[in-house]
Image: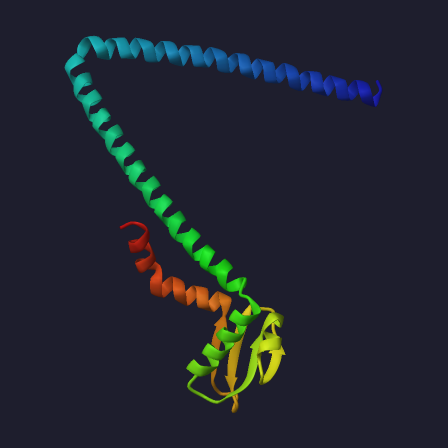
Amino acid sequence: MGLKDVKNEILQDAEDEAESIREEGRKEKQRIIKEAEDEAEKISEAVDEEIESQKSSLEKKAVSNANMEAKKKKLEAKQDSIQDTFEEFSEEIREMSESDREKFVESVLASTEFEVGKVLGSSEFKSVVDTEFEEIEEEGIIVISESGDRRRNFTFDKILEDFREDYRKKVAEKLFE
């Protein structure tokens, strides 16, 4: 018997067994359906009033679940709107023009309460920084004191994180007034 014949025989056996299992499943399904129908008929005849009570309870539960799901969807939509707002803010700071980058650096340096000795920053800031500059992967800048013991992080991810913490509630209030 060749390999192909063995393979075909195995496949045929598997198909036969699968069909047998499916047939058993169909029979079991019919048996379960019949049992359920008989039981439902007995319950219906014996306890119509109780069924009405249960039906009413289930309807109330379904309405309550639907209301809860609607609230959940509404909250998710609000969360998506808030997230979209922060993503839009993120895009805006990442797409700064050269003059906006200069203003950003000036503002950062003016707000820093120590003498800046070095600036770490992404490549697009190199041309707008007048002090010692070291390129880093993160977008934005980090300013370091002359002594090296103090630093302030103005990377875009940090700015976005701080903005999110500080203004999440205000953004939500503005969006959903």
